[in-house]
Image (cartoon, rainbow, N blue to C red):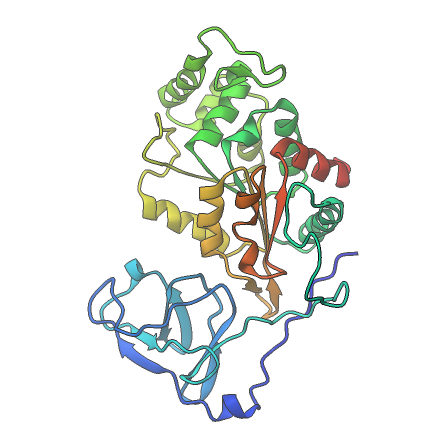
Length: 363
């Protein structure tokens, strides 16, 4: 059975905490700018000493700014800073300036004695991932049973194979998906598959190209835009399968962010970068597990907003689990330095990954 590791609270009775000075607070000089020497947050739990008390930044993200307000530490992007905000200044991490970064904060079981030299420590095509699948399956079961919030970040390749789409439909219908983050392409090609049986003009079952198939995704976008929305398109065109169809059917939110190269885009795509980012973060703030598949940019963007920990409603602090799935070793390992409990890379294609996960969950 899966069991969450225990959070190790800092021992604030230690001399370095007791003797630490209060963190220096300096007013933001103007909107969207921090004072010189501002502290930038990491992915780890961080504590700040104010008025003799240590405060945890409960809702954090990387490369943002801690602000003390109304007896709490808020972590804000630069664009959300307001003139006069009381910003923490200081760049040390071990209490010297009233700032403590708590990196090694969860209990963990040691699989074996650490060695200076060992083979096959990186995660590559040669890595055995069977145990990772077992752990992930148990984690997903745990999340479903304990009201976890599983966020999936999907690239368009997730919609290129009929079987992969079927597997993902089952994951949604079975309660293993609380939100989907993607771009215009994932939704377009998934809906193209439901509408015309192709993805980028190639049959999603046989992979055979259609004559004039390069028009298919454009015809799909055009039809959706004619109906005015994805739900209207699904209803009026009698769409009965696919990732986006299952989201609409099961009231699972999907966040679609645009890019400079988008054709269309679909009506639901966020065209303003920061509106889209704020919407992503609204789901990241609730996420307990994040799984990114076949999209380096979207997964890294999400990873940069995702801390290694989550403070639950009852005050419990738990890890946020992060998986990055890609055929490229570089991509799969890109976020692998986020901490042993926070991120794992799995080097495989999304079709095999989804099949393995669904088989493990008996879907």
